[in-house]
Length: 303
Image (cartoon, rainbow, N blue to C red; front, side):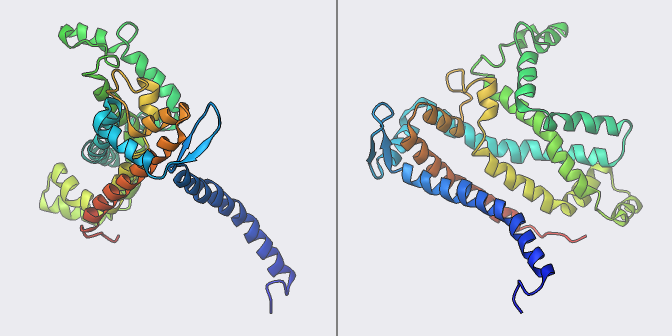
């Protein structure tokens, strides 16, 4: 019997078709077609003034590679992009693990603290970057007055306007804004750990620190690995934070590769933008796959 042999089967067929048609079309248009066009654009040169399009083969790729070694903005863009990876792996994720562990202990006011930590994750990034920039403003912010209150006037800075502190301030913003999301994911993983393991640990007299390292981290390692992989791949697409806080400045000190691509597109340099995007995707794939390879060497756990 065919799929249209009965009314129930016909209704089921049309229902499944209606549910899958949009995501399939979305994938074909915004993933397959867009990526295919990007590859084609990387071999072309666009003249925005005249509208002429010329095939230049690998000239755009050679141009981008040359700029990575000679142009200051491209150097900072690539360096800062690579710095996002250890920031996520060595700073953000470990802090999120610790915060999630503390929340799992249901300390006093833990519900309030969970809301405070997760709140930046649900607010528009435009709003939280605006609030953050006001906090660190040399004239209107509260950071410099607090430092002055404690006699630390020597540490007062134009935080987002000083090349020596701008990148660190942007990094601090990303950690502050990203802890809540990762902690929420990790808290869900921690909640699935059997209570028997905690009881055994208490009988052996382990400290909370050892419990975190010896029990919690091994049991939630698959979730930690997933967050590390997501954070690593996202490092190659980050641009909005730097764009909104510093616009890549001062002196390109907070520029990122993705922000540099946006700048090329804004100028109408689509060929070089596409070539840079392809190069960045290749580098991102290699780095992400390498980190995943080493993470997968650790034995996963089953609950």
